Length: 97
Image (cartoon, rainbow, N blue to C red; front, side, top):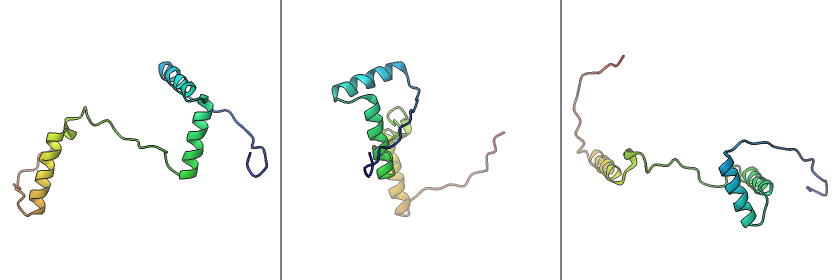
């Protein structure tokens, strides 16, 4: 209800993995709400805040580029470059087919 008016309702259909649906339904039951209520809370919050109401990030732990040792190495290179101690070498252009 908004401003004393009953808002028209519509159905939304989504597809998800059956195990995920089952687990989410169990979670919703544990916190005392239905899946429909949970999705409506999500939608209302997203619309009100104009953003996804939680942080979304890529899993980095499986990518060695983001390993703590490589991050430390890259930060060291950055410090060297900023201090004017970067080591750069010219090389021939390598073209790949």
